[in-house]
Image (cartoon, rainbow over all chains, first blue to last red):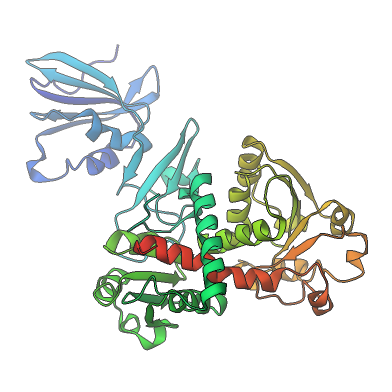
Length: 151
Length: 308
């Protein structure tokens, strides 16, 4: 058991098992980089049995919903989420894949209208395992390395 | 089925019942038109045709369809003469045009443009081609042509020939044919084979699919041969284009072993993939196919306007 290097939070959300190096992307996607997003505690490159190395993000004073956290599934499919109330974990869940993904991923097709006009990107999940998405606009499907490459 | 206000953006959104319904209404309108000469279902309605890319058949047949329904048409056939040239966004163009019209038909070089237009507009939007993505009204008129020629689509053996890799027409047509009990022969040069995911999807839906490079050997099997042009503009690489250019030509010699009832289709324009000598033969169905564009588009305009 590695020594605990960041303090326990009394209230809030702990996102654990984030692939090492992805914490910045996670807080960006969750909108936690804004000043009013709550105090953040970040541990990066922490030894992990499951992942080798992992990142942990603790958000003090804010409870993130399952729906909000699902947004990070594309970059941190292994993440687990703990809701902490009065120093106790009251709820625990793994991130899941939503039916649709909004405004996170850029369409890799340069000729897609979503890359040419002021449009929020939108993808439909065609298959969860392996993950395959279809652009709502140009209808191209993307999978594999193309997905993290366009975040 | 009430289609009032519905957008026609992608053939993916059509069920078999939807397709059959459109074909039935098109057939009814074709009959009424040949009896009366002109109809007045869409009197007082205005169609806006926004063609950001060149087209002969699609634009003229939509306009003809609207006139035949008794409506009128405004629009443009190139973006060069519009405010798009000044940098106006597609969304703003659509919001403007919908103030002047009751329905919009759009062709645009970017994939997804029709979907965006449909989301922005309150009035119905029909996709007349968005880049290399969808051209749903072409698929419907192709199905209509086959149905009118054979009475039924079920039971036919159909060959798709040419550029099966980049051709949006053959992708949509193959997906729509999967609703029917058909056998498909996919004939193309190795470099231009139908994308694997489409072939898999067809097989999953129970279509018997054969992939081949041999046109001559396949012709005797077919009831329909759907020929497509190898489109230079879709190739990322000129060298790749030159390798496959002129791979196939349908001519009287190659048709010697064809079934008597074989019908040849082509979305047009053609270059050299069908020899003009075939035009006079019993096999040629491609100009009839052009004609089908009008009743099918009349049906779609009338249904989405809610005037039929």
